[in-house]
Image 1: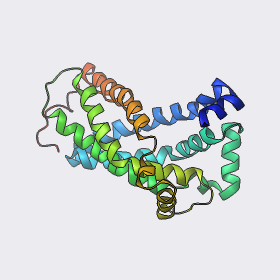
Image 2: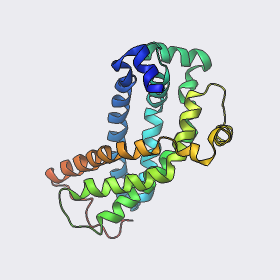
Image 3: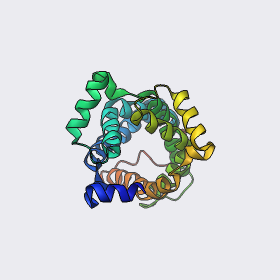
Length: 224
């Protein structure tokens, strides 16, 4: 029904509303995430801790783009990204661009810690092949995504709902709306989307490291 409404009001172009922001956010967020995770890993000696800290850093830097992407994508028939940004700031000042960030920070910390921790564990137990990081990164992302998807649902509600102000309030509203399964609405599509995304992220990053002669991500038994 939502798809039909978008097509009726905006045409096929409407299906890509907010995509420019999504690309900008993804590019900057993943660049910060992977490079900072490597740096933290060297100093901390832990994939889990390094992933958690890297997730926090990436979120702090790119969160306003995430919020504007969510608001812009949900504004069927709405204005430009600049207009959405002005509306958000007019509603609550500059800090409104960080509305709901604590839910995203919590999710990023646990998600990236779980994902990079799982990835490191798999890397230590699989053959050293150019395709291995892509496969392991995909598996790790699916595990972490399945665990943290309810938090992502609550986060989106906080970003888009102008009335709901607290994490618990948003969670209660979602549970009242559709029970526990409401928290997993859209998870199937998320998993399908995660497979190519994770494979490309981990595969490309570690392939570039391999080409540069950097093998720091392989067989570091002391790193967990």
